[in-house]
Image 1: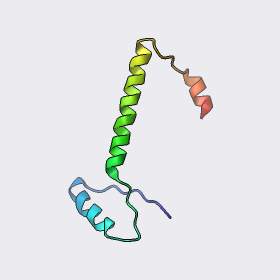
Image 2: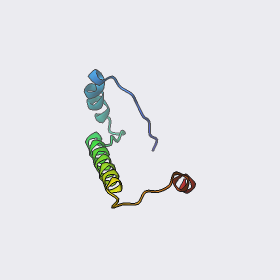
Image 3: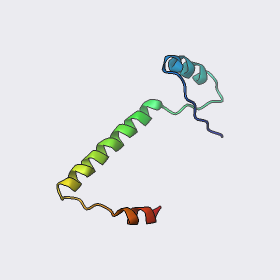
Image 4: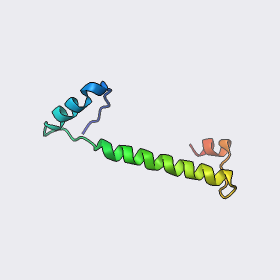
Length: 69
């Protein structure tokens, strides 16, 4: 299976999604799940930042972070 990423004008997005879902050979990831995951990740990040500022969590030095990559 191959994957592509498309940028579609907002006004045509719903039409395109209905069209592409009508093909039996195309699998469409649920975009709502992706939005929920993004929001959950942002909330977790903000919570970690709050804990770091309160001194309840220790941060990672940039050089250590980059070395892990």
